[in-house]
Figure 1 (cartoon, rainbow, N blue to C red):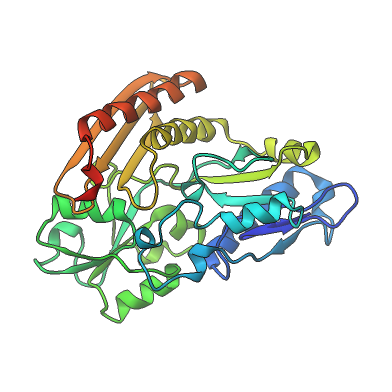
Figure 2: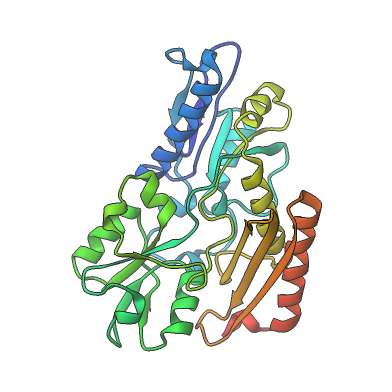
Length: 326
């Protein structure tokens, strides 16, 4: 079986390759690949044999172009296209993706039968000089390549500045922070936990302070649609509560036709009574306008997908034409 951090492959006759997450030479991508491999080995003894699983590195467009903000590169699938092609061509057997990077339409001949249990969805504030965004002096520069983060920061703290070409892996961005390129940055708590780097966190933003990206903290694993054995392996690892939440959020994103060029946030969670609580947000890129909505309903697939779509339609109607152009 073969898969990467970007993908992995199985070398026995019983099973083929397993790709993971589309980021080459990325410690985080590798951590996600190893997490997937370890779960497969624990659930299926035949995959624990030496040489059963091979990790393969695939470099994606999003990895190659680091000199421009993601929004300027444009398009969908910046971190998945090359991995999907390798999967379809049979070069790998599974693809492990960070779900927030997966386009709302899966490529033909592929399925995504597994979401691993979701990590913490929140964003971490990291700074050497302040304990929170609110404590940063006017004119301070926050580094983030995410339009979602940029728009929410500028909406709440218009006196701050955002460096939106703040690209690179976690280690690179922390190095830039230490070198004084920016005064603060925001990183996903999930990634820092997977890298065992939470000691760098200054504080953690609440969901109300910074609504997360759709599917943030969730790992999805894809395989070819005609590979029943691989689909069975992956289905055994699926965390259903995560799958349902991600489905709700992605229905919201699909309705909005969101991409890296649109500041969109969405989060579905389960309350103490077992209901689904969904919060969605769209913003103008400069943060001057932020539109929010919420929904509550049963924690079942059809209802949650309908909830996400309905929330998306509401915000599309409220936003009107040209909303994302400001």
